[in-house]
Structure formats: C-alpha cells, structure tokens
Image 1 (cartoon, rainbow, N blue to C red):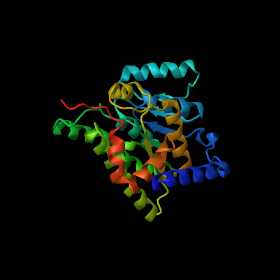
Image 2 (image 1 turned 90 degrees about the vertical axis):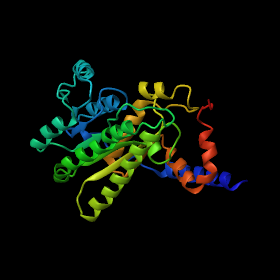
Image 3 (image 1 turned 135 degrees about the vertical axis):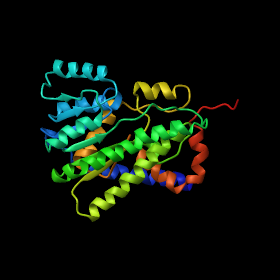
Image 4 (image 1 turned 180 degrees about the horizontal axis):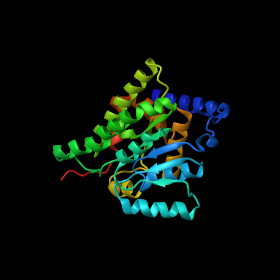
Length: 282
C-alpha cells in the first residue's frame, strides 16, 4: 500500500475510534434566551441559522442588504409563532449592533455576510478585489472590534463563517480566497491574544465546503465536479460550534482531514485539486 493509502486508512481508523467514544457536548437549551446578532441572514446559510436559533429559543437580530427579503423572513417567523424574534430594519449590521451594545445585550456575534462573488478566472479587476475585501474582511474586523467589550462582559462568542478556500487556494476564487485567508489570519491571531490577556471571549472559525445555496450552485454550475452539502446542516454545524466554543469547525466534517492531507502532501495535491474543476483554455 502506498504511503498516502496507509495514511488515509489510519485516519479512518482513528476517526472511527473517536466517533465511538465521542459524546456530543452541544446543549440546545444553552441557547434559550441567548442574544444573537446574525449578519447575512436573508438567504442561504444565514436564513437557515435564523431558523435554528429561533427554534432553540434565542433572541435574534437579523441583518441583510435586502430589506424586503428580511420582511418576508419576519413574516415566516410570525407564521411559525416565533413572536419574540427581532428582524433588522435594513440599515445594516452596525445599526443593529449599536442597538444591542446600548442595551448590554449580546452573547453571540455571528459574522456571515459576503459580497457578490465572481467564480471565474482572475481578470485583473483590482477594484473589485478591494471592494470584496472591504465587505468580506474589514467589515468583520470592525464589527468584532466594536462588539468585543460587551462580549467579554457577557462571556460571549464570536462566530466567523469562512471557507475551505481560506485554507486551501482553489481555482476561480482569487479574490474570494484572499478575503477568507485574511479572516483566518486575523481571527486566529486574535484568539491567541484574547487567551493571553485572559479575556473570556471565544472565537469559532467555520470552514465550509460547497453548500447547496442558490448563489453557490449558480456560481459553480458546470465548473466543478463536487457534490454540494445541505445548507440546513451547515447552519446547524456553525451554531453548534459557536455554542460549544470550539476554535474551528469543518463542514462537512471530513474537510478537516483534507486540510491535514493538503499540509502533508501539498505538491502532490495540486494536480488532484485541479482535476475537480472544469476549464478549457480558449
């Protein structure tokens, strides 16, 4: 058996043993009454997180760019008799955050919003990359910085939604991947500093693969040979990770092993990675 095969076999055995003895630390009741600000909540993973948080009894404030979609979501909440949940007014996450901070009420800041993503070869548009970095990275840093004092007071949690493309660079994602690598660098470093300063705020970085949201499927159609994972399960994995205060979560779970293998066999993995992408030179 080749070394790679032996490693995969050993990894599978270890994963099986851990799964047998593992006990789920997630307690849904811990989220009852938790005060949550969730960005990017109008569709996809954010919308699914809103449903889960509401089902667990959290007090949530939702923000998104599209106010009309948020109003529709509010109607769904009322239909489901989740009357205590609040929906953002369309003025953006900073308005909602200031409201929560003024009342001292914030336990979870879930940063999930992204700018419109171009899934294509690099075409030299520096201005677009600068704009995407502002939306996908700098706004995360600004919101987290504003929320940190209140989160520390409430022993709260920062939950940062990222991507496998922030761990492994992939084709068609030059600008997007740059923003996700930036998130990993900043928030992983910040986690060290908070621990060193004995500031009791957890940071959970969420590493997601291809998820079956409408936007992701539209962007990748015909370009990748990958199966998308369900958004409701991805949303639940994010919430569980934040509630249990783990440093990182991977969804699907096997992405963690992909990252390990990539670190060990980086040079050998490049060609394998490119084989999952469909591109014909003009």
